[in-house]
Image 1 (tube, rainbow, N blue to C red):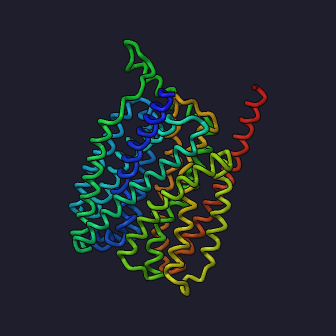
Image 2: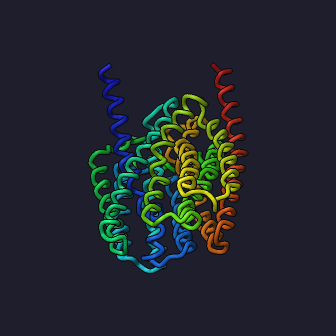
Image 3: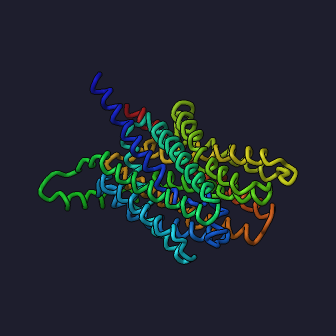
Length: 426
């Protein structure tokens, strides 16, 4: 009994350490969440330029995920996770100098390497290995919720610094420095609190053996069609998620929301909703639907209906709080889906020794929308100002949700067949 208690304590302690890093590493790459308008004003960026920076980040991230298919199973989390965090913080120190547009593009390109190639797939691998099949929804749900808590506290602290320093260029610089120093400190702490991964091979040719195992896992992951289905389900969710960013200028342009309140809304929209969506998504997937893939399929239907309703609403005649409530409610649905969209990896029977490769491939395909969605959405808004442009963005988000429903339906059929085959064998 005592050993079981110690084991549970260690599991949740490790999850807390992972949450701490996961909740701080993306603050700089997603600076626009709380400071979209200040970035435009003091870094002299248009909607399209911000979208281009995010798309370059997404493009390099996708190729980084390919490399991570190998790296995540080859090197220990004790090395990769702190490296990703500290490297991110150092890039942030340079960003605080307000480089020109091409410098901005370089910053977001470098962030993609530390955030996504080095850090994120290793984080997902570590979380999956903490729990068994019955705990996957909850483990990933608590990861998302915990990240939401850290995200919100850190982002509101940065917003407070921004306001304290006058809500101008100095305030934005102070917020960036705060993000940078925070993530560096978390990286140092993570190095001392995380342990090395267990080695797969323990002999004199250990390095060669580890390389061979990592390459074998990479090849196996690429040959599993089930992993690709999970990946494209994630792809669909993330395509809609990218659109949440544009609720921020939507409320400014159509509802006249003030800049400071926009920053608070952006934090709640992108971070606070994780605290709500994470546990709800994990609970519904594990306890109600008994399947993450079935939960995602049902959620896509809700997203499609909700987005159509938003498109048809008379926004020009609606109050600002009605607009905020409507968009935050939609965001909560998306975050509940994001919380568990990697959980089907357990349902499709991915061997645990190739978890890193599977998560990297899932990330490569799943997060690919960041290569183009931000640029597409941003360009639509620049070329079609006003409510018409936003409705075009919302219609595109609806189309991605329809694609997600189709793919997740195929995934559910495969999962059901696997479970039926297991029952027949038993």
